[in-house]
Image (cartoon, rainbow, N blue to C red):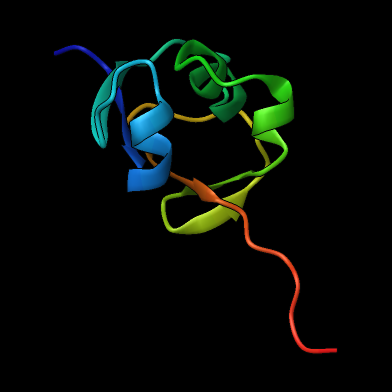
Length: 83
């Protein structure tokens, strides 16, 4: 059975992604990182600064290696708050 990483882009990102898909299964390769998926979907490194990733429901760094079967969710990072 092929190894895969399950990816979900929140709608705002899916509209701008190369695949235009909200959900994808990406073939797992050792060393794969969220930033690699973002770049493959046509986002620049500048875009990536505004993207947050959850790996298996936990916030993760964009350069952290993922494992076979991981679930990744990409969303626009929100900042700010009360002053």
